[in-house]
Image 1 (cartoon, rainbow, N blue to C red):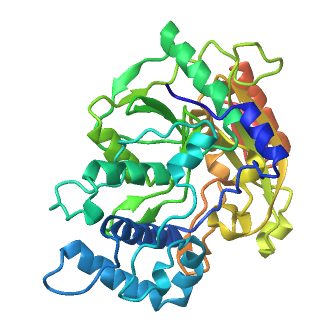
Image 2: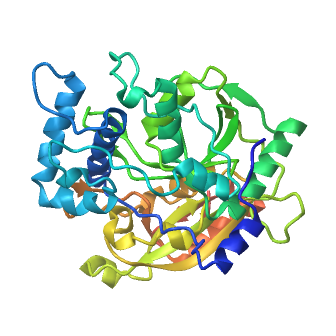
Length: 406
């Protein structure tokens, strides 16, 4: 029977002095994500083999790649600064005689059980396919290692209260026919807010990290995935796609037809479900153009999570112009696909999209696409027209900075 982290569990942890607030979502650059993803592959090798990867022509090709990669990570001050806080095993500083230390604390499975969360083993998210299998260290079966990897990737979702009613509503929609399930197709698109069934569990893609190019030259990005048993993981996009492809019973849960339902909640009905927030931001960048047009330059975005957490690391993220931001307006959404609404807003203001190129701290050029040169009043008016269902009758005139009839 699947268990959930209950409100009583969270209250008890709080009484014991355990901080149950969700950790801030760290926004990383594409380069940082690529470095971390490469290091995680080395960590998985160490978990399987119980030793560091080594050089040598008699070694598996992947082991030799990991050995070269580890040498480069160790010799880079930038990589060390990024990875050392994540290196719980001390791999970066271990010598060639490195062996896994004995575990003295509760393992992840025992910890989850103590919190009332049942880990579901068997979801092989990271296993490479069509590759010669490696020998298994310590006499453990491949199934045991797969289960251990999956447990290690999932942690209790501290803000599950926010997602629990969403899963409940999705189940109701499935039962009434408002939603249906479709077979997942190879490498199908994965968007923020998408629902899937994987190994019998419903999951939602709650957040998408910035895209980056992996060591194999393929685009990837980090996801925040929430499961209906109260756990979460920060999978890579391609890892989730591989898992969905491998599970012959995996399904995509469709979005319901919201055409007859309200976009924005004024008074919430019992069966209304909050599906996200529109947020409008201003940048605190010291760029001369942005300073001069502070009250006109706005970022328009949509999120299914908490807006403040979304912008917690704005000054490190090119998406937010590498500067702190100010929240100037938020709009709660009910019963609506947030990504489709975001696309509609961006398309409406496309003729005043800010054309600006920044260079991140590694010198990589970035062009943020969600910033617009438009007054807040015009944004609020557009949202009102969308709510009224009359937006198709208007267009935005940049000369007058207002809406005019088409």
